[in-house]
Amino acid sequence: MHAYLIRPQRGVFDAHGDSARVVQLRAAVIIFPGSNREQDVCAALARACGREPLRVWHRDAVLPPNDLIVLPGGFAYGDYLRCGAIAAHSPIMREVRDRAEKGIPVLGICNGFQILTEAGLLPGALLPNRSLCFTCRDVHLRVENNQTVFTCGYEAGQTIRVPVAHHDGNYSADPETLDRLEARGLIAFRYCGPDGDCSEQANFNGSARAIAGIFNETRTVLGLMPHPENATDPLLGGTDGQAFFDGLVGALQ
Image (cartoon, rainbow, N blue to C red; front, top):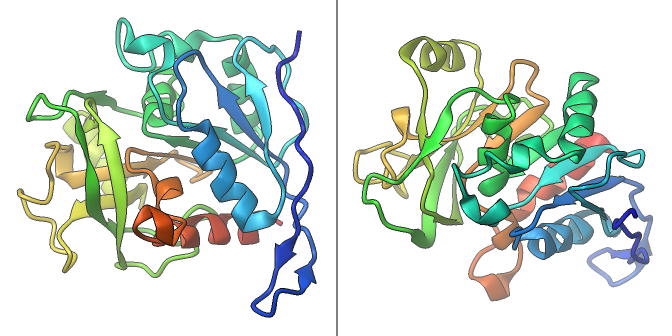
């Protein structure tokens, strides 16, 4: 039985409170046993485009037509074996791979990033933080490449503040892969200080070259450990993540 559902659309309002056109972006959020940030990313997308995403259960074998696929944060399958290792073999991931190969944008946040690496859609792996502790706090990121559908809402080199919440966010890859990511502009974000300086202190989890997020070769798949969806409302302490979703929706409409 298919577990995805379509929620009613909500209108977008301009600065004067007048109803504006609903952007017909069709996003699909994949939910695994142990996902816990699907509501957050659905709310962020709905805020940006006025339309609730589809919610797709991981055991479904078919994805409905969509313009964007999101793998949210959480602890899929309780992080057994390795973070994302079991989820990477869920039935829906065959469809995710197929859509990604056809150029449909795929976004993986935190646990979603871990799943993308385990599924082979992104290189490298996410290891335990060098502190060996779960870290939940705001961090600063530097935007490394804004020439993509995911990052076009920012300026290159811009510093933003968003939360992290992970135990295994230490990005690791062999030197050749790291050099390739650098040379081809496939690093999306780096951990930095408030001034944009990528110091060892700012690189709290020990990620190679302070990497916080990467693209695939075509820049249509993005994985990042921080949570921009939790920085889209002043009540959450910041809104630096709103430009992420506004830019993404604008690029895909």
